[in-house]
Image (tube, rainbow, N blue to C red; front, side, top):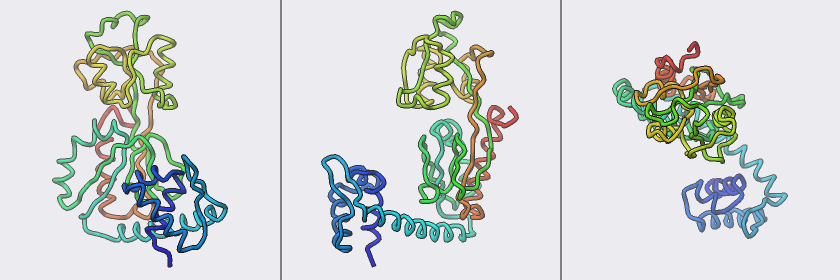
Length: 290
């Protein structure tokens, strides 16, 4: 029987393609990944990975082993999910992944209330723009702005995040739309729907600055540096901001709540899901009917 830790390190290398990337993902050092990989190849008496100067490439046998080890991993996670779901008491730990704007601007402020309701339950929130795998237990529950296609997930649309244009009430060009300058995302996020919406409205007018997250857009917009495209639940609540161009092209992102089907009846997971849904539906600007 092969050492599962060796197999786990092999999986990371196979998925990421480099020893250093696998080391970062597993939170170990480069030498540990290399040693685990060498140990696995020694156990199997076969080469699984071709080590190139800047990457790792699977051998033909490595590809076959990769498929089998992925199936082993899925079985291990399935057992873990079933055990987690079988825990009836409202205690333990539940992990939640959500877009940064929802974690920092909406969910974090309600954690004291959640703690009062469920004192034995630890909620671990991760602000992540990228999608995580519920199958691999990278999170137990997730909020996303894109509906997932994975058939193993139970998905529910709980809200709708409308966007609008906002600027400081002291913005020097407030009354001169032709001179507006815009606050956008970094170019690496040009595929984001809200970035495309904003740049379409800008129509060639200058971008004053670029930031990687909505909280930064909000902070810079308050200073009068330009026009920001913000979720309305943020912009409308800020007394220092004024909503602009009410006739601008409407834009929104739906908010999806998802859980792996194996965990949907877990009492702790249900408690987290119900609380997340409550937080979103209590915000008038996030309601599906708004």
